[in-house]
Amino acid sequence: MNRMFDFVQRNRKFYLVLGVLLLLNILFFILSSSRELRLYNDSAEVLRETSVQVRNARRRATGAEKIASNVSEAQKRIHRFFNSELSRGGDPLSTLNGRIYNILISNHMNFQHISYDRKPELKGMVNRIVIHVPVKSGYEDFQKLIRDLEQIPFPVFIDRVSISSVTGGEISATVDIVTFYGEKKS
Image 1 (spheres, helix red, strand yellow):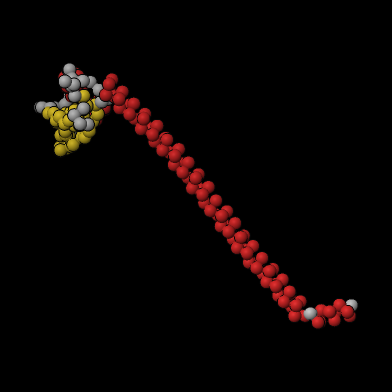
Image 2 (image 1 turned 135 degrees about the horizontal axis):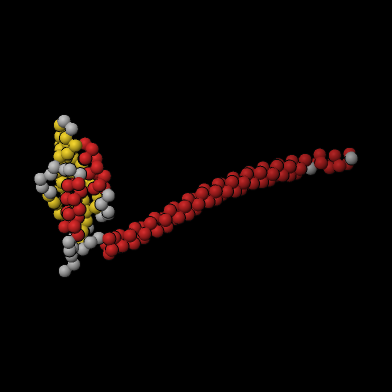
């Protein structure tokens, strides 16, 4: 044991340098492995964020597919509306006028004239016709009139009711009824 101790004593610079090199190697290993560990953790975080972004992108894609499907369905309905439900010329407007007059008379309405406004819409494919019906009546008759006008099937609907005066038990109002007719193709 003394011999070994003497040997180390004589070569202590060598062992001191060897010990320092060993410590430096261990320190370098720890530092580089902590750097690698940090890179690994950062990569794991980037992978998690990327996974979340991919999931969100898939959700948005599913939403876009639903929107595209809804747009396609709306286009089919519009096509069906133009081809089957929308009258093209002829006398449906006069039939509608007769129906409105019958409703007005059956509800005891006091009316003088009905006016019309025609406005082309959708690049001349459809005419929007507003029928202005000024009326005077009692409150109950007016309520029944509105209910009866609402029963007229699509594409006819009440656009606006403008009450101009209420005196005693009588209401003076204008009911705007809107309908749509397709343009005649030349």
